[in-house]
View 1: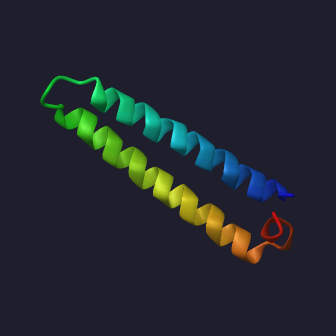
View 2: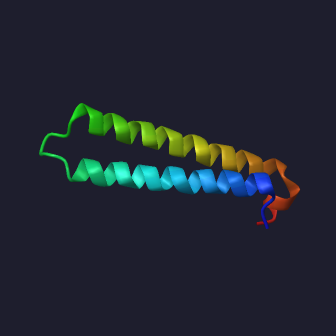
View 3: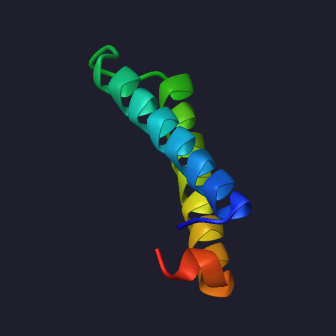
Amino acid sequence: MLCASGFEFQEKLRLAMMEQEAAKRSLSHAAPVPSHHSVKRLEDASRRYDKRLSDFQNHKQVCALCKES
């Protein structure tokens, strides 16, 4: 069971994962030499995903409700 904050962290993590996957697909469908914009988009999406994952894990460590799930 997640608390409201835990659910919000989980939702942000899910959205960041979807964004990262979309950036990967975009990069894989790019021309043989990917554009700077495509590479930057993937790097930014990956950073956001890593940050969201860290936030969620840190929250689960301190929240009694979320720790059990």
